[in-house]
Length: 411
Image (cartoon, rainbow, N blue to C red; front, side):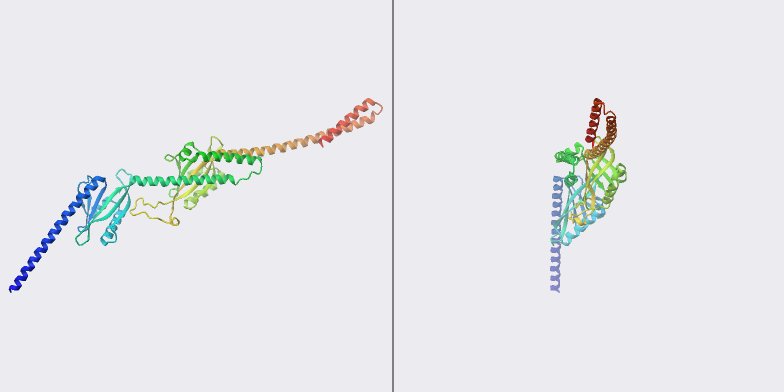
């Protein structure tokens, strides 16, 4: 009986000590957690970033207020109002991977619409911040940083690179148009010299895109298959014209209509190949009758950086990517086309004049021959009838001889 009482007392003492130790450890853990919260708040204030955390044991989110001074506890239903459903789902999947021990940290890239209607881009760096004494995940923190300026800068750099690639393609196409021509006669040789001179002048100022667009000989263009819209850009920032494909066909000459229709059809089908064509329009031109354009388009594929859905950027093979839009250059070749037309017209005119001259000379020869034959015959008859008159006979002889010489000259 006494032994049983002693054992009960010892057990009571052990349970009391165990409870006291657990309480002390919990108090120490809670105090340490509050210190961590304070440190996180100071960090957010210093760097002007958004900070939130997830308490694994209680299953609640801790969202740092706008003044970045204290954390507000939020249930998952309240927390989900800060993001889109797809982003919340991705965040929840990341938290579960932390709890399972599959990952320790992860970076997400997201896009959100803000109050003023614009779109901002953020990175969310999530990581395990504290663990329990049993080494279980206790607190997960997330640091949300605005990288909109960097994203826009990367987008501008990518678009600039595509513009220069299109300019290079346009130059190569421009070069191929004229190097294939052969100078068979003097007129074609002169035309080739004019073309080479024009190409040299174009190459000189096309080295800088800003100067090229300001001069006015070239325009950049974007064609979007989704809405079948052609966008013409005057310089790197100014949109000169936005027109649907169906309306753009109204400005095309009937001789180029089929080529332009095939071009739009191929781009609407998102054909992954570049396009080149010379298009004659019905738009008046200051140096030619109408505007003629050397048109070059290259496909631009979908970006690998997400622009609204959470997750990391992934490299997608080009074969599986879909064409997002087409970037092109519109080169004014109206003066060259006008020169070609002028040379062709002058050549035809010269040949017509040559034919008219030959016809006139042949007709004159025939008429002169007829009259001279008549004069020679009359002179012979008069000489025969005036054989006794020596002076008259001599004159008629000279007349006949001169007519004979004239006949020999025109024969």
